[in-house]
Amino acid sequence: MKTNYMKKTWMHLTLAVSLMGALTTVAHAEPFSIDVPFAFEAGGKNFPAGDYTVDSVASGVLVIRSAATSESAAILVAPAGYSNSSKIGLVFAKEPPQREIRTGLISNATFAIPPGAGDHQVEAEATFNDDVKIWSMHPHMHLRGKDMTYTATYPDGRSEVLLRVPKYDFGWQTDYWLAQPLSVPKGTKIRVAAHFDNSPANRANPDPKATVRWGDQTWEEMMIGFFTYTVEPRN
Image (tube, rainbow, N blue to C red; front, top):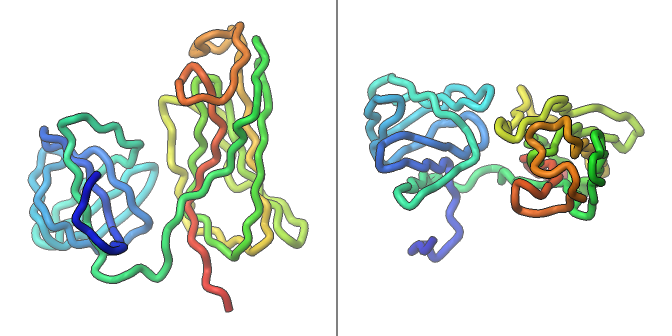
């Protein structure tokens, strides 16, 4: 997308608004006040440009409230699927943020799921080189994905399960936002373990006879543990 911005510019909020006027997706970091410089429609209501408050984020739903009308819009946070009729609205920050929200991933792209395997495990891990706060996690697999677990092993040897999704569903991929961000010290190792069902018992399985490897298509597979985080300032 071509823009006229010649320098680094921070955004508070990104809105994808179709020509039908339905607000379809919002990407954000945490509750805050924002300035929306354009009018939009959501839930059959018209909302003016101006100041808004992000009141809550829960179960993939973000609620923003207009300072002018006190009316609220509930917005489903979901992966964006855009068409040629989509419009993009960008809400720019008035000043740089104290910390940058980053998206990381822990993945394994070298697996081979055998034909008929009903519970094939794939693992990956990574170690933080800084003190960070983890805000959310997002497991991603395709049609053979069964479950995914994030486990942290801290520098003192303690281990803790951060997220366990026991019944993964490709049709209901979810951002799991923590009630409070998790402070993770430098040297912490995050291990992501996933299981795949390539058996005939998996009714969504495109081909139980295939050896399945990494690929972009849904009849192939992926194993990615996404997470959002901020790097904490060094003392």
